[in-house]
Length: 637
Image (cartoon, rainbow, N blue to C red):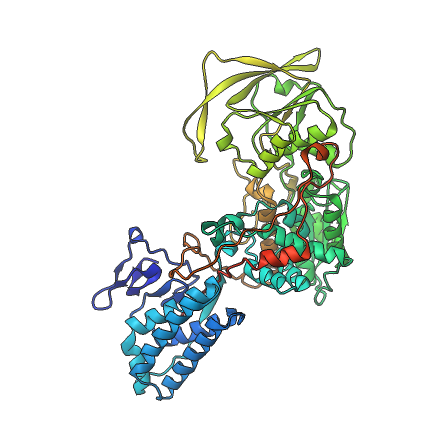
């Protein structure tokens, strides 16, 4: 969007109605939502924007109010009553029963609602209406005079929030939190499952970017969104564990899913709900992908994952374990009755360090992904006295904390940058420190030194931080003359993963990227091979569980469109828009977040018991009451 006739977005007025519309400067602080198709005008939480001078702002206002009314909860009644009053007044105006004083009354009501509503949504919802009445006053007067009629054109609407926008899967976070607040845990879980079919899993291991976007960050503490999701799932388990209901009318088409990680499970479930027959082919003896073989029990108990996978299986999804697909023969699968294939093999192959001697292989040199897989599958690992873990991500930290529990006496993480650049989450690093894991920063491995086929020591060099690289982090550079060795009994390499892709046998070659991932269409997830789709870590490289799950949701919609010969709809994007910023300065009281118990570090290192507790029902309801309901409604024509 590059031209406006009028804008009040973010409270900054741009008015070009008397002359030719000019370009709206980004430096002016005006960032508009990116809406699909051509929009003549839109009204949203932060104002009114008109591109076409002939747009009907009065009808736009009416339609905005109708959509805004749907989000108004009525709990404090302020914005609900205010919206209803303004809607009634506009309808009276359309019947020629209004006057100039009605417009002043609308502005007064909007101001009162903003000052007195108890949630962020109510406080911001009527600013754009007030702007419309103030800056398009003559259009409203024409309605009152009978010189203008309310337009009956089709309007489109979208709803977002800072937390929704930050969530990779776009969950209706204020919605499910509000249901928890009102003691409707089952309804909250059903709402979560619309876009997150693994709520108990995600409620434990999600990286929760939504919490960083929470408006309460500027007030006291962010809402504990992840734990509230877990609370809804745990409440269901305590009640005996529900079901996911029956799928829709059966369709004749069948879909093969290669991999049972979060992406594969989400796609399989959504496709099954649509009525498709779905079979998942899984290499390992356990379903769940990295959630099953890559996340330790102390973070994600296997019974939680097993329960949620069992619910998916009960809908009719067939999972074939211990079935590795090394060669994907598309024609053979079609002959077996599969009309589409989803490649969701994840990224289960560790990256090399690039150190001298690592290719030779030796006893005591272990890949981090394989190490965690062995731990999770219950394979016996003989504890050593000292182990070095190379890397700074969550996998490296998981390896180190697992070593502590297995019985390794001295566990040390070696990372080439500083603590500030570590990609692992702060809570994971702090947990490792509390459990006795040592950290050596600004040190890089240079050589794997072995003697008689056994690892002996790690050749290293000290590093210094230079200018930022493409990741935005300072690039580590070796310091001359600082070469040294660290003696240890074992070294675990955990510096990232890549996918181990099957060989695709088809008329056309499967296109891949220089990173060894599958190349897909960004909107449809289609590969270069007709009928074959791909998503999750095998496309993006190692990402978060919730990102993979979201890919599965989207692939299911894309496969459905492909099989039914329909056009896939596009999501509304708010990319680049400061959804967290809103006009107004109504008072919101401070309230600290609820906390959960953690196992004592001295006790938890003896086994793999879950270390984080969950909210009680009362705690969850109290925490949910902290939500400000920062919904943002946008309507456009």
